[in-house]
Amino acid sequence: MIRFEQVTKRYADGTTAVDELSFEVAEGELVTLVGPSGCGKTTTMKMVNRLVEPTSGRILLGGEDIATVDPVRLRRTIGYVIQQVGLFPHRTVLDNTATVPALLGWKKARARERAAELLDLVGLDPGTYGHRYPEQLSGGQRQRVGVARALAADPPVLLMDEPFGAVDPVVRERLQSEFLKLQATVRKTVLLVTHDLEEAIRLGDRIAVYGQGRIEQFDTPTTVLGAPATPYVADFVGADRGLKRLAVTPVTEADLEEPAPGRASGSPGTATGTAPGTSSGPSGTAPGRSLGAATGKALGAATGEAPAVPLGASLKDALAVLLQHDAGRVAVHAPGEPGRVLGSLTTAGVHRALRRTAAAEVSSR
Ligand code: ADP
Ligand code: MG
Image (cartoon, rainbow, N blue to C red; front, side):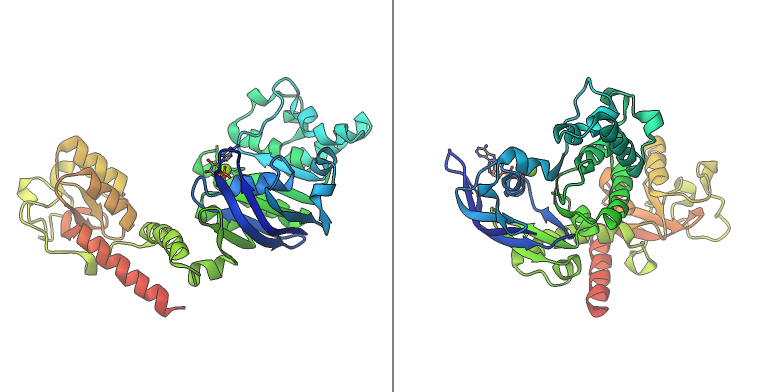
């Protein structure tokens, strides 16, 4: 459906943004372009709707060389969603959504009907939101309008450049899953740019991992993660995978070292802290249950005590607490028993735990 044939883009100042790029996106496929800032993702995308013209090479859309298609006509067949959304501030949400149908000369009533349908599809009740202005919406809602507008004329192709980049992580996740549902019904051919590997993996049928102006690997998320094609890709997914593992790996007893004297989470009276029966904790400072890392941090900060996390906390949370304090270690106590210190976790322990889970991951493949 979209086909790049040895496409190169050199800007006037000599920057080669994209170098001999060749790839194909099948009809109905969602391909994510992922890579660090400045690697040529946006340039790639803008060449598809001719906001940027290639220096050499060809781009075909449905078999047709887009260089031969009038750019304005071309753009009406391509939905375009960008991070800043670009809604018209003094047009209502409904009219914003109906922009392209109106440009295409649809009758006003039909365009509005279509816009209402699309707003509904992206989870915005047209009765409630249709007559509002963009500034009266939250960032996430504006982003939804952006998607609705891009889809309004039912274009076969959708280009999305960091579409969920400007909203907070919680809203982003919701928008991502809504978009996946939407895509399952509308089945557009989508090129989506992101610098976020997690997003690329989550949304893409296939992922193009960009190095500097080149695609280092173009494959399914599973293959990219499981069999990185180049050291660069391995690095790119590896760093992220390590961080992700931190978040899902709990602190276990095997990761702990003996508690150093005086390092226990409690007051001096419970310095060694391991005696059963002191489980109610020192001086009633601990809430006693579900003492998450955040609480540990707060306790440490508020009382000047050594930081502590419960066994079973994620390595990520434990590391966060560890990095907040100078001690170089964080006490780990029995869940729900802040007074019963089981040992302490150091950065070396975090490394050991990561190696353990990495080994498990490899052997389970
Ligand atoms: P990405 O979207 O991956 O961050 P871009 O495609 O925006 O990357 O940019 C790729 C490279 O091209 C960068 O080095 C950028 O500075 C350069 N670039 C982008 N647009 C222009 C331009 N209009 N003129 C000159 N250089 C540009
Ligand atoms: Mg960009």
